[in-house]
Image (cartoon, rainbow, N blue to C red; front, top):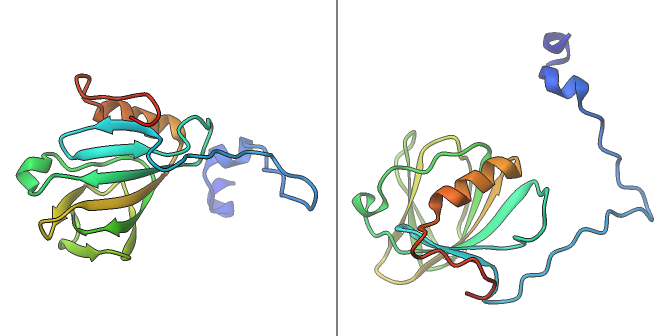
Length: 161
């Protein structure tokens, strides 16, 4: 049946989502003011998770100030379930992957990619590099990634840190 329907078996047992109809809204919303968010310092840079208090999301939005300036400093490539969207807010970023040649992104550039592919963010151009990254996957998988990135001695879990 799954082959004929070109789907996986789990889809057969998952109830369909109710489509949004006029006048019916789920009411979900999360406001993150400038400078707020759940900040986590890593060897790669500072991750500021946005909408962090909203549970059961389908994406994890974050602003990352990338400080790693070489692959050696970055270390092992990131790899996690799902897909990722990057947008360069400020500066210049070199994105390395284990399947493609590096790509240089400048302010205003964006890239959407499969995040199961190993990837590394490297600040380029010598200045500040800030990116918006939106990871799209099951939240439980992404929360495990967030926890793994945190350096206990530098992690800051309060808003506005």
